[in-house]
Length: 210
Image (tube, rainbow, N blue to C red):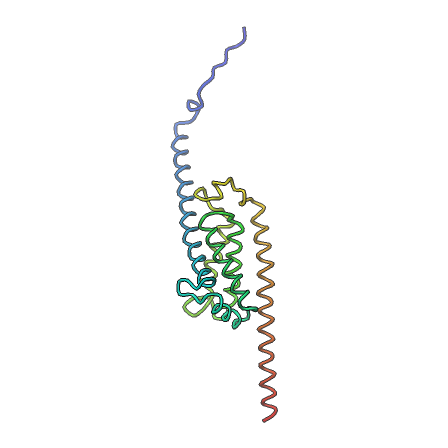
């Protein structure tokens, strides 16, 4: 006869405090997921509203025509195309962040748009009250943080099995966004530098004629 082996239910093998620790762990996860949901809704909603101002003129915005003229005046040319790209990045990225869908791409796109906005405000310093880049940097860093952290369980990414929220998508999205943003911001800087040099040359010629 073989030796009889006793089989115990798993719950009898657990230590007395294990159930309490498990409950606390579950509660902590729920708190984290709820926090991410609130952060996504707030950040995504603000980004989407700003994008709608640019694209459709909603919420007191100037639409593509007015925003395009502004973009042209601060060195982003062609202005209307720049306004369209910025509006799509903000609206699309904001809506997707709020929904928790394609979070790496959404967060990276929004962060790229905010980097472009921050470049305009950088000469004014940091704080928003002086026209600085504080506001754009805050939104951009929050969007980037969500892209890295993930949307949490209360999201479409979780519901869809994270099909468009894979780990490799995070560096890929940031790399593509960084490359595109660097090209656009760099072209703006060169354009502004040439315009300033042209103004200086014209002023020098006027002084020479006097």
